[in-house]
Amino acid sequence: MDLRMVDGMRQRSRKRLLWAVNAVLAAAVSLAAAVMIWPLDEAAPSASWEEPAAITRTAGTQIEPMSKYAAIHRRDLRKPLFDVVPTTSAKTRSLPPLKVRLTGTAVEEGFSLAMFHTASGELKMVGVGESIEGAEVISITDRSVTLRYGERPVTLTIEKGRAKR
Image (tube, rainbow, N blue to C red; front, side, top):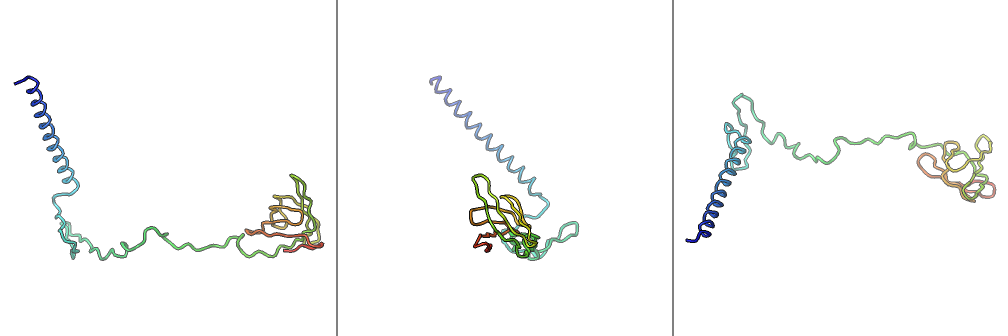
């Protein structure tokens, strides 16, 4: 026999031996894990899916039947735990009507003003971002002003000396 042929047979037999040792070690690890997960003193589950009436443990406590927990199993776990009750904030409550009248606007590039008459008869001039009678000025054009009153936008227009909503 050739020396190379003998080395090839030795190498194949070593590989077979290593595969066998690995298989035995894998089986031992699997068995040890199964024993740790599944204690040997408890009864193995039956192959049928029937629910036992009650299993008595050695300490004298009883395991409840699964039918007792049916309501929990049917519960949709993705829905909120409680119903959200909408609350009305100060902004969403019905606000009194806005008592201002738009009397004029001054629009220039980068700078705009709006003139309002209030319910008390005062003449006020405000710019974008400022507020009048609880309403914030959002935008000013040559014939109208958009205000945010509460959470809703309100547009006032100049119309022959009178404002229209």
